[in-house]
Length: 97
Image (cartoon, rainbow, N blue to C red; front, side, top):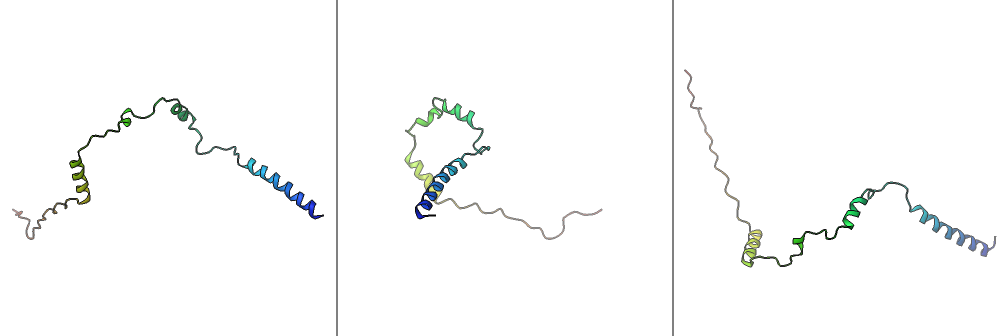
């Protein structure tokens, strides 16, 4: 076999294997995304799926209040002290008759 015929054979095999690789990428099985077409179509035909209040870009707020919240988040108040525990050592105070 000459060098030119071996080169032509390799080129033919390489071009045919490219077609086979593309064919193997098409599956005939169920995937995880199957079954969402009805939901997708209903969302596709919805005119405006967002909440109308989401268009409000003017958010009302007080700078002093926001600074106080940030300060309380940065330095939280100390936890309250644990409740005192009373331990009775001795008799129960119940007498027998």
